[in-house]
Image (cartoon, rainbow, N blue to C red):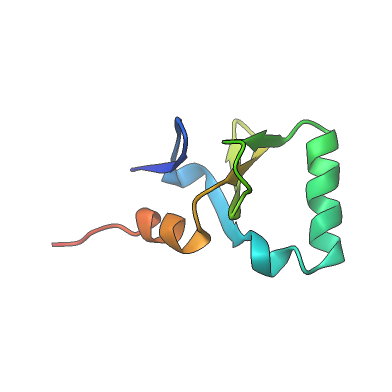
Length: 85
């Protein structure tokens, strides 16, 4: 299954490691530092110019990619849940 992260970005759900709410996790200095270093090293992809509401850590071909999404973490988590009959 694929998950739409916003804009034109769609990733396989198997590549998603974690989905995080920006308002909650950016209260931690460690998380802010993590995102700063990741951006400096080229691991961060901004999906849009809007203020990010969430960030998604993925791994593809043993390479980490962090997406900054304008979509809330709650909505993205709901999109990852599989519908069962």
